[in-house]
Length: 278
Image 1 (cartoon, rainbow, N blue to C red):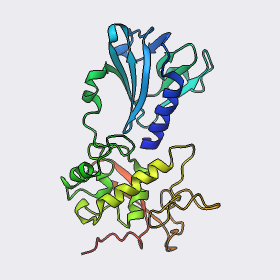
Image 2: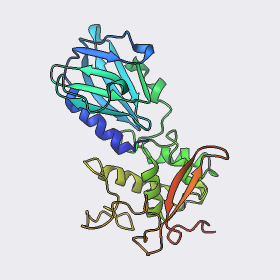
Image 3: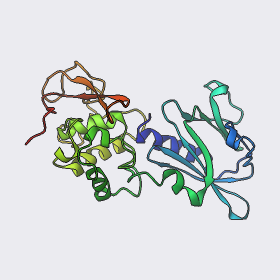
Image 4: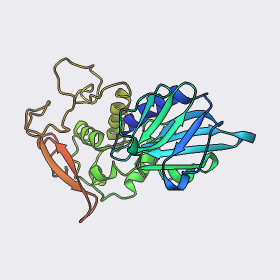
C-alpha cells in the first residue's frame, strides 16, 4: 500500500493535469457507476487525504461531486496526452477522465466511487489528522494513539484512524529514529510527538521524485543526501549494518492481533531493544 507521500505526489500530478479543465468524456469501469457520464463537468481541484485521492468537480447549477479513489496495493493514476497509448493493460483501467489537454487513467484502483462533495466525510471522515494535510494536529493524533495504550506502536502508526499517511516504510524509519522498537506498546513511548515529528519530516522530505529517509541523521536533523549512503536507515536492510552502531539490522513481523495478517518490520536490536525502558 502506498505511503502518504506517494499519494500526495499522485494528487499533485492529477491536479496539474486536470484542474481548471472541463471533462470531455468519462468512463467508470465499475458496475455501480458504469452509466455515469460527467462530460461537461469542470475539475476544481485534486487533493490527497491520507492515502485517499479526492477529485473535486463542479457541474451544472453549481452542483459538486467528488471522485474518491484509494490505490490499495496495486493501484495507480497515470497521465497521458489526449489519445496517448497506455502503459498498463486496458483491462486493469477502472476510471478514465478525458479533457482537451490530457487523459487521466486510474488502473487497478482498490476503491472507486463518486459522492457529493458535501458528503466527503462519509468516505474520509474516519481518518485521523493527516501528516501532510492542513488539518495536521499533533495533540489530536497523540490523543488518538493514547486511547489504546497497549497496542504496539508499530500497529498504531499504521491505523489511519489515529493519524493518516504513514505506511510500513515510514513506521519502520520513524521508530528507528526515535529509538523505539515497533512492538513496544504505545504507552512505553516516552515522546510520541517527537516520533510523529520525525515521521512528518520524512514524508515532507520525500514529496519530490525518488525516496530517501537518510536525509535525517540519528537525531532526526536534516543532513542532506550524502553520496553513497543507503536510502533507508532500516527498511529492507536486514542483515546489513546499522548506520548508527553497526549491529546487523533484523527483520521481524508484527500483526494487529492474533490471527491477523502479519507485516514486516525492520529494526536495529541495539538501537531499538525489544524490552522498553522501565
